[in-house]
Image (cartoon, rainbow, N blue to C red; front, side, top):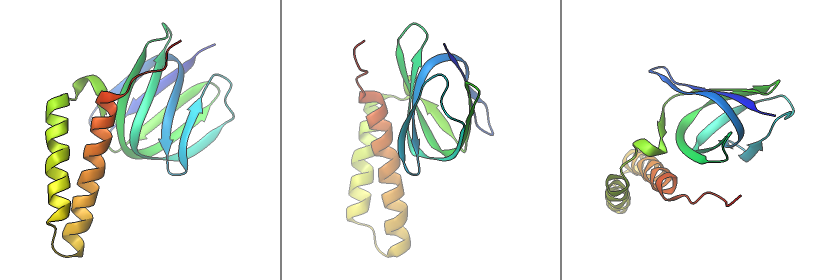
Length: 137
């Protein structure tokens, strides 16, 4: 059995193919989706999207919030923005994380601190995506 996965943003189609399973970050935690999953509509949180292809290879993408609909072996994710893990430069991601950590420690005022913490969370998610080691089959 397989799933049809569509990941769409306002700018482009990130993913459109058949997959074996996904692991999705939602506002209530991560969920795994296999064929014949119960129908669900859920908010998507900032976080990694793990995609298991039909050849058992795992890929990672990063979603920057959105909405997912899972029904009849079809997964449609409408995201505000997304990046494929393969498009993220590991060195640049690590450098952005270090800058974000420094910005949190020197933030002044509530607004600046909130913005710095969001940037730090995004940076951590990007580093996690490029450093993720898929499970062995």
